[in-house]
Image 1 (cartoon, rainbow, N blue to C red):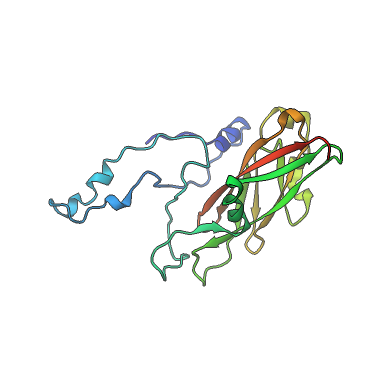
Image 2: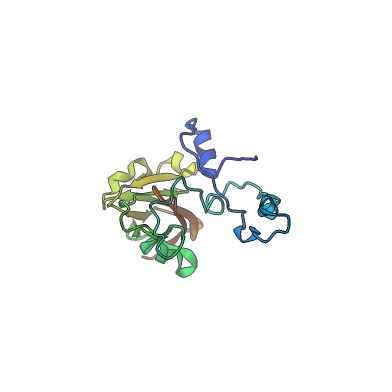
Amino acid sequence: MKAILTNKGREKLAQGAFNVSHFALADDEIDYTLWDTAHPSGSDYYGTVIENLPLLEPVPNETSVMRYKLLRSTDHLDKSAGMKMATIGGSFNNKVNSNSGILDLSWKNVSNVGDEDSLQCTTVNLHSNSAPEGYSYTLLNTNIAYLYLDDNPTTAGRFSQQTEQSLRFRASQTLIAPPGNNTINIKAKRITSTQDLSKTTCIVTGLMSGATEALTIRVNYKAND
């Protein structure tokens, strides 16, 4: 087994705050259609092709690896129409599927204010008897934007401020939207004309289902607004 730290993990390691308390397993590289129940050598060989598939090289980009996590239980899933994995829905997913998966925000230089928007998630394919799901939202670069909860910017803490240190070093931000409160706000920070069209990524993960989705955030510099 080969493992490396993600970008978020490397940031935690640099801060001296790297402490693994949970882990996940995924099977991104497995093609289950290769399970061959007609193998001439019998049931011991049904998975021979799968077992010999090449392993993917580990990469640090959280948005392109471990998209399909293995689950301890599937009791929370709706199996009425067959086994379907939980996926992220709501306005977050709508934004992923429009404008090439990019949410555009602007910093208005004259009025000295940044655009903001709300991101709301639901989980598709949950069983009707399942409890409401909470969500983890991670913004990978808070130099150009930040997240906050409950229409209250103070919940962003230090991430809403721009200091000399915060501009020199990239830092991510993670906020938890508890069950029943599945909306989070994102607001553009002050940028300069040389930072026009800066991008980062917001990743959402269902705390029960493990469903995940990623949205690109792009901040535009508006010199005359």
